[in-house]
Image (cartoon, rainbow, N blue to C red; front, side, top):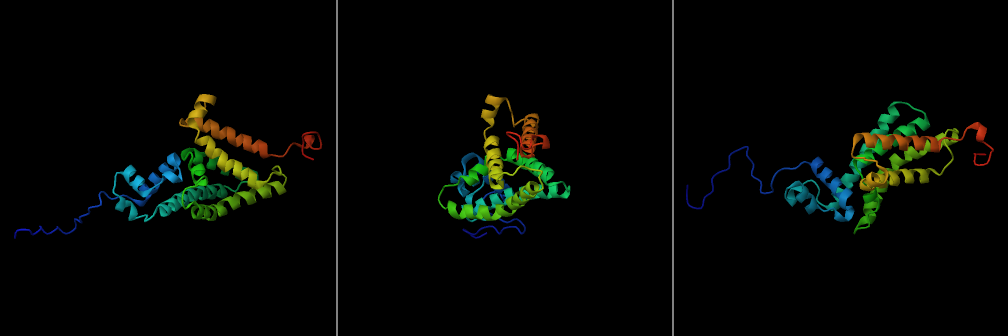
Length: 229
């Protein structure tokens, strides 16, 4: 071979200087973990690359910008909630039972991704305005179904008349805050969400609280002090 010449590359063995290949799904999962721990301000393509042990171009091949990756995280979270809602819809429950089943699924998902909702909702880093607009556009259809179900249950007299927006806000933000406070829950209340039994206990109690808290008072209490007129 002449001096300075390079050996021809064998067919079928592409050469890459960008390090090991990484899938789009793995990148999104790594980004979700970053969002939970560090919030939107801590999310960066370079940081996700370090977490996965790959080079920056490997990430940019799938997500050219941080906002592209952030939106993919939102898309995945919304898709999971929508899939759980579809499973609940398939069982054909009443409005109240649908709400309880949907909240059970939402509680379990929040427990698997603690802090994700609050990290996304509390995004005040540079460029947060368009990102939050995207979140609203993607989440509105899912929340709209829950709101309409709640309003239908209220009109049918199966649920107390409480502002649906307030109920949904307390559920979404409240569950996220509780699920991201695991150390405090263990020390203060002995509730361990990292243990299956502890998580099941918490979810069951929350659903029962929501069920009975939303249910209308019995006819015997209507018209009495503290009861519903």
